[in-house]
Image (cartoon, rainbow, N blue to C red; front, top):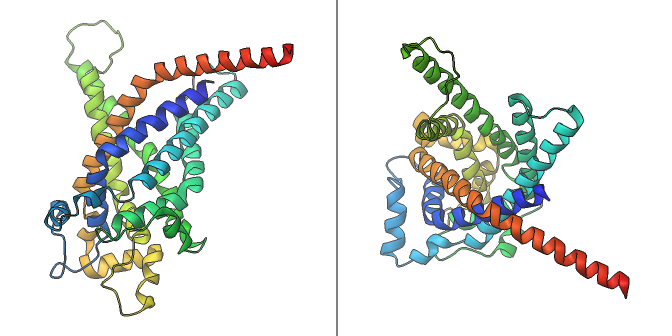
Length: 316
Protein backbone atom coordinates (compact mmCIF):
# COMPACT_ATOMS: atom_id res chain seq x y z
CA UNK A 1 0.00 0.00 0.00
CA UNK A 2 2.77 2.43 0.99
CA UNK A 3 4.78 1.59 -2.14
CA UNK A 4 1.73 2.15 -4.34
CA UNK A 5 1.01 5.55 -2.78
CA UNK A 6 4.64 6.66 -3.17
CA UNK A 7 4.69 5.46 -6.78
CA UNK A 8 1.41 7.18 -7.69
CA UNK A 9 2.22 10.52 -6.06
CA UNK A 10 5.72 10.51 -7.57
CA UNK A 11 4.38 9.71 -11.04
CA UNK A 12 1.74 12.46 -10.90
CA UNK A 13 4.32 14.95 -9.64
CA UNK A 14 6.58 14.04 -12.54
CA UNK A 15 3.68 14.45 -14.97
CA UNK A 16 2.96 18.00 -13.80
CA UNK A 17 6.64 18.95 -13.74
CA UNK A 18 7.29 17.58 -17.24
CA UNK A 19 4.29 19.39 -18.75
CA UNK A 20 5.12 22.78 -17.24
CA UNK A 21 8.80 22.69 -18.25
CA UNK A 22 8.39 20.94 -21.60
CA UNK A 23 9.02 23.97 -23.88
CA UNK A 24 12.29 24.62 -22.02
CA UNK A 25 13.16 20.93 -22.31
CA UNK A 26 12.51 20.95 -26.07
CA UNK A 27 14.68 24.04 -26.64
CA UNK A 28 17.43 22.59 -24.47
CA UNK A 29 17.37 19.19 -26.20
CA UNK A 30 17.41 20.62 -29.74
CA UNK A 31 20.31 22.87 -28.78
CA UNK A 32 22.23 19.96 -27.25
CA UNK A 33 21.60 17.74 -30.28
CA UNK A 34 23.12 20.17 -32.79
CA UNK A 35 26.70 19.23 -33.64
CA UNK A 36 28.36 21.73 -35.97
CA UNK A 37 31.44 23.89 -36.03
CA UNK A 38 31.08 27.40 -34.56
CA UNK A 39 31.05 28.99 -38.03
CA UNK A 40 28.14 26.89 -39.32
CA UNK A 41 26.16 26.57 -36.11
CA UNK A 42 22.41 27.16 -36.38
CA UNK A 43 21.72 27.89 -32.73
CA UNK A 44 24.04 30.28 -30.87
CA UNK A 45 22.18 29.65 -27.62
CA UNK A 46 19.02 28.02 -26.30
CA UNK A 47 16.90 31.13 -26.90
CA UNK A 48 17.59 30.82 -30.66
CA UNK A 49 15.52 27.63 -30.68
CA UNK A 50 12.62 29.50 -29.12
CA UNK A 51 12.90 32.38 -31.61
CA UNK A 52 12.95 29.89 -34.48
CA UNK A 53 9.68 28.40 -33.28
CA UNK A 54 8.14 31.87 -32.95
CA UNK A 55 9.41 33.21 -36.31
CA UNK A 56 8.23 30.11 -38.21
CA UNK A 57 4.88 30.12 -36.36
CA UNK A 58 5.61 26.70 -34.92
CA UNK A 59 5.23 27.57 -31.24
CA UNK A 60 2.95 24.56 -30.79
CA UNK A 61 5.84 22.39 -31.98
CA UNK A 62 7.64 23.19 -28.74
CA UNK A 63 5.28 20.58 -27.34
CA UNK A 64 6.07 17.93 -29.97
CA UNK A 65 6.46 14.59 -28.25
CA UNK A 66 4.80 15.83 -25.04
CA UNK A 67 2.44 12.86 -24.78
CA UNK A 68 5.30 10.40 -25.23
CA UNK A 69 7.48 12.28 -22.72
CA UNK A 70 4.65 12.36 -20.19
CA UNK A 71 3.96 8.67 -20.70
CA UNK A 72 7.65 7.86 -20.26
CA UNK A 73 7.94 10.20 -17.27
CA UNK A 74 4.85 8.71 -15.57
CA UNK A 75 6.03 5.12 -16.12
CA UNK A 76 9.59 5.97 -15.04
CA UNK A 77 8.62 7.68 -11.80
CA UNK A 78 6.03 5.03 -10.95
CA UNK A 79 8.55 2.21 -11.41
CA UNK A 80 11.29 4.13 -9.60
CA UNK A 81 9.28 5.14 -6.53
CA UNK A 82 7.58 1.74 -6.31
CA UNK A 83 10.89 -0.10 -6.70
CA UNK A 84 12.70 2.19 -4.26
CA UNK A 85 9.98 1.92 -1.62
CA UNK A 86 9.75 -1.87 -2.06
CA UNK A 87 13.52 -2.44 -1.90
CA UNK A 88 13.82 -0.12 1.11
CA UNK A 89 11.16 -2.00 3.07
CA UNK A 90 12.71 -5.32 2.02
CA UNK A 91 16.13 -4.19 3.25
CA UNK A 92 14.76 -3.03 6.61
CA UNK A 93 12.90 -6.31 7.02
CA UNK A 94 15.90 -8.49 6.16
CA UNK A 95 18.44 -6.47 8.15
CA UNK A 96 16.21 -5.92 11.16
CA UNK A 97 17.23 -2.26 11.30
CA UNK A 98 14.87 0.59 12.09
CA UNK A 99 16.59 3.01 9.73
CA UNK A 100 18.54 2.76 6.52
CA UNK A 101 22.18 3.85 6.22
CA UNK A 102 23.61 6.22 3.63
CA UNK A 103 25.47 3.57 1.60
CA UNK A 104 22.51 1.18 1.56
CA UNK A 105 20.20 4.02 0.58
CA UNK A 106 22.41 4.98 -2.38
CA UNK A 107 22.67 1.36 -3.54
CA UNK A 108 18.90 0.88 -3.35
CA UNK A 109 18.32 4.15 -5.23
CA UNK A 110 20.81 3.10 -7.93
CA UNK A 111 19.17 -0.33 -8.27
CA UNK A 112 15.71 1.21 -8.61
CA UNK A 113 17.06 3.69 -11.15
CA UNK A 114 18.76 0.97 -13.21
CA UNK A 115 15.55 -1.10 -13.38
CA UNK A 116 13.62 1.99 -14.45
CA UNK A 117 16.11 2.86 -17.21
CA UNK A 118 16.03 -0.63 -18.73
CA UNK A 119 12.22 -0.73 -18.87
CA UNK A 120 11.68 2.79 -20.24
CA UNK A 121 14.69 3.17 -22.58
CA UNK A 122 12.70 2.69 -25.84
CA UNK A 123 10.29 5.44 -24.77
CA UNK A 124 13.21 7.69 -23.86
CA UNK A 125 14.79 7.17 -27.28
CA UNK A 126 11.50 7.82 -29.09
CA UNK A 127 10.76 11.00 -27.12
CA UNK A 128 14.27 12.34 -27.82
CA UNK A 129 13.84 11.75 -31.55
CA UNK A 130 10.47 13.49 -31.53
CA UNK A 131 11.85 16.50 -29.63
CA UNK A 132 14.88 16.92 -31.89
CA UNK A 133 12.94 16.60 -35.16
CA UNK A 134 12.46 19.69 -37.33
CA UNK A 135 9.59 21.85 -36.08
CA UNK A 136 6.32 20.60 -37.57
CA UNK A 137 7.85 17.33 -38.81
CA UNK A 138 7.81 15.25 -35.64
CA UNK A 139 6.52 11.68 -35.98
CA UNK A 140 4.22 9.82 -33.65
CA UNK A 141 5.29 7.35 -30.99
CA UNK A 142 4.40 4.21 -32.92
CA UNK A 143 6.07 5.48 -36.11
CA UNK A 144 9.21 6.47 -34.20
CA UNK A 145 9.42 3.03 -32.61
CA UNK A 146 8.53 1.01 -35.73
CA UNK A 147 11.10 2.68 -38.00
CA UNK A 148 13.90 1.66 -35.63
CA UNK A 149 15.19 -1.82 -34.89
CA UNK A 150 14.89 -3.29 -31.40
CA UNK A 151 18.59 -2.63 -30.84
CA UNK A 152 18.30 1.00 -31.95
CA UNK A 153 15.44 1.51 -29.48
CA UNK A 154 17.98 0.96 -26.70
CA UNK A 155 20.50 3.48 -28.04
CA UNK A 156 22.19 5.24 -25.13
CA UNK A 157 21.28 2.54 -22.59
CA UNK A 158 24.85 2.32 -21.30
CA UNK A 159 25.02 6.07 -20.69
CA UNK A 160 21.56 6.05 -19.10
CA UNK A 161 22.71 3.38 -16.66
CA UNK A 162 25.85 5.41 -15.97
CA UNK A 163 23.74 8.47 -15.20
CA UNK A 164 21.96 6.61 -12.39
CA UNK A 165 25.09 7.52 -10.39
CA UNK A 166 23.98 11.16 -10.49
CA UNK A 167 22.05 10.96 -7.14
CA UNK A 168 25.08 9.37 -5.48
CA UNK A 169 27.31 12.24 -6.63
CA UNK A 170 24.68 14.75 -5.53
CA UNK A 171 24.35 13.22 -2.06
CA UNK A 172 28.13 13.03 -1.60
CA UNK A 173 28.50 16.70 -2.55
CA UNK A 174 25.57 17.65 -0.29
CA UNK A 175 27.06 15.73 2.66
CA UNK A 176 30.52 17.31 2.24
CA UNK A 177 29.08 20.82 1.96
CA UNK A 178 26.82 20.19 4.96
CA UNK A 179 29.71 19.00 7.13
CA UNK A 180 31.80 22.05 6.24
CA UNK A 181 28.93 24.44 6.95
CA UNK A 182 28.09 22.83 10.29
CA UNK A 183 31.77 22.78 11.28
CA UNK A 184 31.99 26.50 10.53
CA UNK A 185 28.85 27.16 12.61
CA UNK A 186 30.22 25.13 15.52
CA UNK A 187 33.51 27.02 15.39
CA UNK A 188 31.73 30.40 15.63
CA UNK A 189 29.65 29.40 18.65
CA UNK A 190 30.84 31.00 21.90
CA UNK A 191 28.91 28.64 24.19
CA UNK A 192 30.26 25.31 25.43
CA UNK A 193 26.90 23.56 25.03
CA UNK A 194 27.35 20.60 22.72
CA UNK A 195 23.84 20.34 21.29
CA UNK A 196 23.80 19.03 17.71
CA UNK A 197 23.66 21.59 14.92
CA UNK A 198 21.08 21.32 12.15
CA UNK A 199 20.66 23.07 8.82
CA UNK A 200 17.89 25.59 8.39
CA UNK A 201 15.28 24.98 5.67
CA UNK A 202 16.81 27.69 3.48
CA UNK A 203 20.35 26.33 3.95
CA UNK A 204 19.22 22.80 3.14
CA UNK A 205 17.45 24.03 0.00
CA UNK A 206 20.48 26.02 -1.15
CA UNK A 207 22.89 23.15 -0.47
CA UNK A 208 20.53 20.80 -2.30
CA UNK A 209 20.50 23.07 -5.35
CA UNK A 210 24.28 23.51 -5.29
CA UNK A 211 24.93 19.78 -4.91
CA UNK A 212 22.52 19.06 -7.79
CA UNK A 213 24.42 21.56 -9.95
CA UNK A 214 27.73 19.90 -9.06
CA UNK A 215 26.38 16.45 -9.96
CA UNK A 216 24.98 17.80 -13.24
CA UNK A 217 28.30 19.45 -14.16
CA UNK A 218 30.24 16.24 -13.51
CA UNK A 219 27.88 14.03 -15.54
CA UNK A 220 27.01 16.58 -18.24
CA UNK A 221 29.39 15.29 -20.96
CA UNK A 222 27.57 11.94 -20.71
CA UNK A 223 24.20 13.73 -20.92
CA UNK A 224 25.29 15.60 -24.07
CA UNK A 225 26.51 12.38 -25.72
CA UNK A 226 23.25 10.63 -24.83
CA UNK A 227 21.15 13.35 -26.48
CA UNK A 228 23.26 13.18 -29.64
CA UNK A 229 22.96 9.39 -29.82
CA UNK A 230 19.18 9.46 -29.42
CA UNK A 231 18.45 12.55 -31.55
CA UNK A 232 16.62 12.46 -34.88
CA UNK A 233 18.71 12.59 -38.06
CA UNK A 234 18.78 16.07 -39.60
CA UNK A 235 17.01 16.58 -42.90
CA UNK A 236 20.12 18.37 -44.10
CA UNK A 237 22.17 15.16 -44.06
CA UNK A 238 21.43 13.77 -47.49
CA UNK A 239 24.87 12.45 -48.36
CA UNK A 240 24.05 8.91 -47.36
CA UNK A 241 23.35 6.66 -44.42
CA UNK A 242 27.00 6.41 -43.42
CA UNK A 243 26.72 9.66 -41.45
CA UNK A 244 24.01 8.30 -39.20
CA UNK A 245 25.95 5.36 -37.75
CA UNK A 246 28.61 7.24 -35.70
CA UNK A 247 25.88 9.10 -33.77
CA UNK A 248 24.53 5.81 -32.50
CA UNK A 249 27.67 5.01 -30.49
CA UNK A 250 29.33 6.71 -27.55
CA UNK A 251 32.70 6.82 -29.31
CA UNK A 252 31.07 8.34 -32.40
CA UNK A 253 29.38 11.07 -30.35
CA UNK A 254 32.59 11.86 -28.45
CA UNK A 255 34.59 12.02 -31.69
CA UNK A 256 32.01 14.28 -33.39
CA UNK A 257 31.92 16.71 -30.47
CA UNK A 258 35.71 16.84 -30.17
CA UNK A 259 36.32 17.39 -33.89
CA UNK A 260 33.65 20.05 -34.48
CA UNK A 261 33.28 21.82 -31.15
CA UNK A 262 36.35 21.07 -29.06
CA UNK A 263 36.47 20.48 -25.31
CA UNK A 264 33.85 23.16 -24.57
CA UNK A 265 31.40 21.28 -26.80
CA UNK A 266 30.98 18.65 -24.10
CA UNK A 267 29.39 21.35 -21.93
CA UNK A 268 27.17 22.94 -24.58
CA UNK A 269 23.77 23.73 -23.06
CA UNK A 270 24.94 23.17 -19.48
CA UNK A 271 23.20 26.30 -18.12
CA UNK A 272 19.83 25.26 -19.56
CA UNK A 273 20.32 21.72 -18.23
CA UNK A 274 20.99 23.00 -14.71
CA UNK A 275 17.99 25.36 -14.83
CA UNK A 276 15.68 22.63 -16.07
CA UNK A 277 17.00 20.02 -13.61
CA UNK A 278 16.68 22.25 -10.54
CA UNK A 279 13.20 23.50 -11.46
CA UNK A 280 12.05 19.98 -12.35
CA UNK A 281 13.27 18.51 -9.05
CA UNK A 282 11.66 21.32 -7.05
CA UNK A 283 8.31 21.00 -8.86
CA UNK A 284 8.33 17.20 -8.63
CA UNK A 285 8.93 17.12 -4.89
CA UNK A 286 6.48 19.96 -4.22
CA UNK A 287 3.62 18.33 -6.15
CA UNK A 288 4.48 14.88 -4.76
CA UNK A 289 4.26 16.11 -1.17
CA UNK A 290 0.98 17.91 -1.85
CA UNK A 291 -0.82 14.93 -3.36
CA UNK A 292 0.61 12.13 -1.18
CA UNK A 293 -2.04 12.70 1.51
CA UNK A 294 -4.84 12.82 -1.08
CA UNK A 295 -3.53 9.65 -2.67
CA UNK A 296 -3.65 7.88 0.69
CA UNK A 297 -7.33 8.86 1.12
CA UNK A 298 -8.23 7.66 -2.39
CA UNK A 299 -6.35 4.37 -1.94
CA UNK A 300 -8.01 3.64 1.41
CA UNK A 301 -11.47 4.43 -0.01
CA UNK A 302 -10.81 2.22 -3.02
CA UNK A 303 -9.58 -0.59 -0.80
CA UNK A 304 -12.72 -0.42 1.37
CA UNK A 305 -14.94 -0.38 -1.70
CA UNK A 306 -13.23 -3.45 -3.16
CA UNK A 307 -13.44 -5.23 0.20
CA UNK A 308 -17.19 -4.54 0.50
CA UNK A 309 -17.77 -5.68 -3.09
CA UNK A 310 -15.83 -8.90 -2.47
CA UNK A 311 -17.81 -9.56 0.74
CA UNK A 312 -21.15 -9.09 -1.08
CA UNK A 313 -20.12 -11.43 -3.86
CA UNK A 314 -19.10 -14.11 -1.36
CA UNK A 315 -22.37 -13.65 0.52
CA UNK A 316 -24.48 -14.10 -2.61
